[in-house]
Image 1 (cartoon, rainbow, N blue to C red):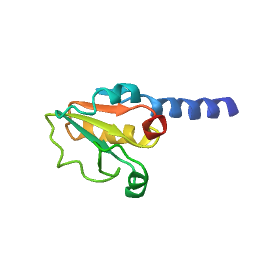
Image 2 (cartoon, rainbow, N blue to C red):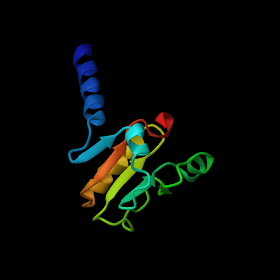
Image 3 (spheres, helix red, strand yellow):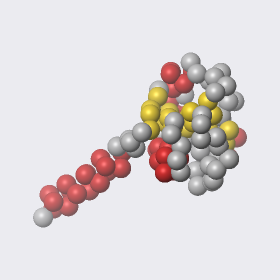
Image 4 (cartoon, helix red, strand yellow):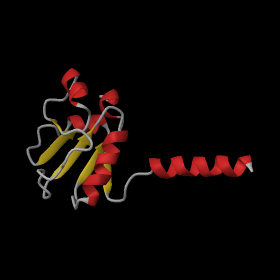
Length: 112
């Protein structure tokens, strides 16, 4: 019985870690090459305190849980957080809201 419970828990975490269909992923090394691209929108979903402590100039702070309705749906949206988990959630929210071009930065600011 314990093995079944452990299997269910492991399956749940594996399912939660899987990328959202239609969301791209990039490394911080790839990010460095596109930071000056004016056709992309860069958002940082960390808290205002985290953002104030350390940020990438091109990224606008829109904390996770905020509305993304002001973002243009016709541009590529690049999303970062501290580790990549919150930005992954934000990417899922963006896809549900109809954004077509969404990319998560793997490893987030920790990898930067």
